[in-house]
Amino acid sequence: MESPRREPVPRSRFARRVAGIRARLTARLGGGGSGGVLRGMATLALGAGMARAVGLAAMPLLTRLYSPDEYGVLAAFTAMVLMLTPLTTLCYGMALPLPKRDEMAVNLLALTLGVGVIGTALIALALWAGGPWFLRLISMEAMIPWWGLLPVALLGASVFETLTFWATRARTYRAIARAQVVQTLLGVGAQILLGLAGLKPAGLLIGHTLQRGAGSFTLIAPFRGRLRALAGEVTWPRIRMLAARHKGYPLYRLPSQFLLAASAQGPLLLTSALYAAGETGQLGLALMALAVPMSLFGHTMGRAFYGEIAAIGARRPEQVRALTHAVLKRLALVAAPAAAVLMIFGPELFALVFGAEWELAGRLASLLSIYLLFQFLSTPVSYILYVFDGQKLLLALNVQRAVLVAIAFGAGHVLEMALTDTILLYSVLISAHYAASILITLRKIPSGTPDL
Image 1 (cartoon, helix red, strand yellow):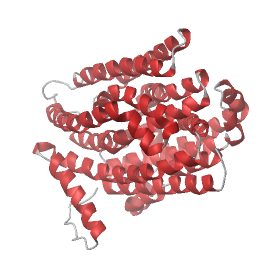
Image 2: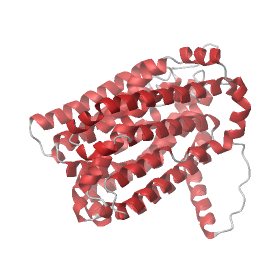
Image 3: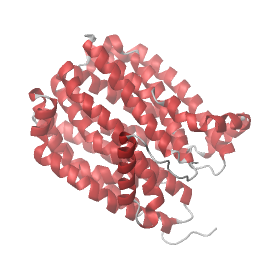
């Protein structure tokens, strides 16, 4: 856990600007009793913001190096990585912030990493047997020569995600922020260099694969010594005991997480199967644009929020409720203006920044902005269900979302709707889902203080 210490006075102009940004974020988000979690959020937001700034600065060049069809291949590849990653670790890593003692948590870490290696190997065998057939099914024949990159990306993603949950447990938010920047620099740099060398679309896929696993060494650095000291505490009986204690994660959280990833990435895979590759690329770029505010505040702040409410614990629900309300109010102030700008100026912004051939991506982003606010608020709130044993409810909510995705694209296919009309229907249905999920999840927080 990071110990509070005095910040050194930055000497360079760049360092002074970074420190100033962090101070302003902390000042804006750190009011009231929620200051601790919001300071952690500010640190994560700054790291994610710097990473996204690098990615955004490179995208105008990348969209001129690679065509919409090639971005369509990347979109399908990314969707498959995100859908399959939960299967590698069985979601055990999500329980890492919960044990009170590091001696028990390190056994859970060993369990998660071991399961991740085995799970990746099994998925690799399945892809070797049926990967080409599946890629033809979704009209992604261009990815067939490079399907071997998928298990590598899965292993890197599972290791990085596991270490991120350990860092969340230790509240080493600066390490997470630095790792995000390292990831983006290496991944985007590889995509640019390989694109200039004419390796297309493989340059996009190799860069994304590198980005998935890169940053793990940076992330583990602050607690490498602590893990080395704890290595002797890892025993097979403890691992088996923790696997049984947290069996709710593979039984309920895994299918829930898979459905969440499938419903989130389903639009890309279904667009790939039902529409042209170029349209898939346009949708992929639109979703990347939406991922900027989500990564900057939604996901990173959600991790910080989870770390804080896990420390508060299920026995103090009133504190969790008060912190949740404070966080939601501040996040709404951030999300609403971003969604409004994207809705009004999406097509013009995309054509200006990424090139005229990406104007459709701007129109799709404008339609998707309808649900951006609700997704933004729902992401951190969903972590409440981890603390209050809400795996079954989370599974039900993700089943609901997957059904709504299927309805939207099923209607688009049957009625032969244009992609823009299908995405509008999808956006409206998922907005309603997120709004309902927030209300249902808040009711999961118990009233009063449970008996000790």
